Amino acid sequence: MRKENSDFKTAFVSEAGSFIDNRDYFAFVELEDMACYVIADGLDTDREVHSAKMAVSVILENFMEKPSLSRRKIRQDLEAAHEWLKFESRRVRLKASVLVVVTNYTQMVWATCGNARLYHFRGGRLNLRSKDQSLAQLLLEDGRVSEEGLSGHEERGNLLSYMGRPDRFEPYISDKTPLSDGDVLLLCTPGIWEEVELPEMLDALAESSDPDSLTDTLEDIVLSKQQQMVNNYTAAAVFANKTFTETPKNRKKWIMRIAILLLTMAIAGGGIWYAKARQAAKLAETVVQMTEFEQDGDEYASAGDYPKALKAYSEAKNAASKLKDKLHFQLLRNKQRVAQAMTDGDEYVKDGSFDMAVDSYTKALGEAEKYKPFKVEDIQARIERSEAVAKLTEVMKEGDMQFQNQDYTGALETYKKAYRAAIEANYPSGQKQLETKMEEAEGKINTIYRETKTLQADNLEKKGDRALAALDYNAAIEAYTLAQEIYQEIDKLERVLAMERKIAKADEKRNPIVPAAGQADSVSAGGVPVSGMSGTQGTNGMNGLNGSSGYSGSNGRNGSGGGSEWSGASGSSVDGASSYEGSEDQASASNSSPNGSASSGPSPVNPGTTAGSEQSGVGPASSTNSSQDRSATPEGGGGS
Image (tube, rainbow, N blue to C red):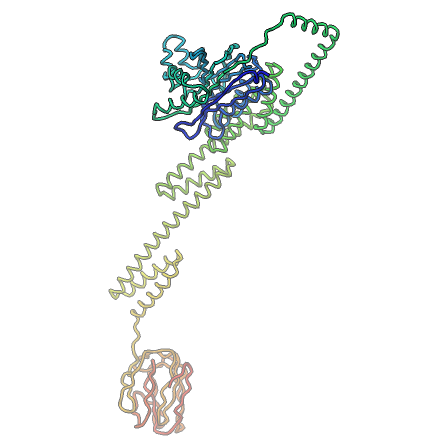
């Protein structure tokens, strides 16, 4: 129970600084016999995945499965995290600087990749500092940079190794280093060691009695520099107040134990073979798993389901790693690389980054020819489609530029061209976008057309108004008619009706209605003239008081020579004279004489006769001397 017999205290601080997102991460686990402390600095810009947190989590999970101070085991844990970052590198390359410290409360082993640092203080002095895997560190070792100038050197971030590197991964793993009571371990990211110099760290350590006060003091120092931009910073302090003391070894006791163990093995020698048999069975099981995963990956790749193929190849590669089968490991890693490139290409297509998709597919094509599961023709088809869509996108952008410059006709033609290309490339989402763009362009064109036609019709209407004012009725009617046709074309019905009214008005002016001849000379019984009106729809004829003929008129119009037009006018005389029937377009109206004979022109009216009613288009009323019926029945309308 090492932990109960030792005293390790831990505290940390981690902040985003001037940034919204903190891409540093620190976590630790203290078990009964061992503890593991991991700090990481994320070097990528992926907004959805935090590479630092992912790396720390994988390392701690592997450590807890099998805690060990073995350098080999620690390397395996680091490689597992490295492979996981590579596997998850889909949108961007995930990468991180990582520092791991493993201790059994008596000794420690630390490992680093990148420039996350470990400071080991003992007795208030620096006992050791981890080395960065950077170009600035190489310059320091060559004597071209001083220790004091390392923290601010421009090449301090130029890393030679880091977790997630695509080509090779070479972490540094230390030997076992003994711990003493009172030792202090400080794990920090560049946000701390770039701002806090070593003398400042020593002063902070001297003023601190526990890890919380040390990390708080370091944070105060960083903030006191009042830099215009403060990077993410994380510091973790481990105070080894009391380390675990190993029990002195009793050589005789251990010799006795070894002897008993050898005797037991000699008696039950078959146990060794049993253990070896179990180990062989486990290896055989791993071989089967590797084979099955590879077959699954081949089937998925042949079907074009590259994400599933990628996952299957990764599992098979991990099995090959456990078997230390370098041949299959390399083979599976190459297949995994092709599947990864195809998966990346598909993701770029979804994001609309077709140029990057072409690059990924081309990269996959370069190695796919070596492996049967990958269909070269499928990859080539995806490349061709992506290239076609990339060109289509450029054409679409050209149309957008024309649209912005108000060249709507040109934009519509460009969109139609791109739409045909989208159909050929089997790009449904692009078709929908272009349909919307074509509708917008057509709407703009129609709007401009209507506005132009409206302006043209308005000008014609104004031209008609001017002609009407100048008494040029023919020109006015012509202009109004043209304007009416245009308004009809653009569906402005209220303007169509307005033109109809203006045309009718101009026509009335052009063809004025002339009063009937002699109508103004007709008189009433008292010598008062009977006024006539223009021809309206049928009026009753005037009845003579003394038995004059009765007429009923229909559709009366002004006649020539002062006469009236009558349609079927009839009348009868009291004296038995023959009745008269006027014909349409009759030049003059007939008047009945006392004898019933026809007469022309106005006839005198006897005293006491009633004045005739006003008529439109009716000739002089007829009268007789004899008594007769005064009523007349109109054919076309009533009169009194």
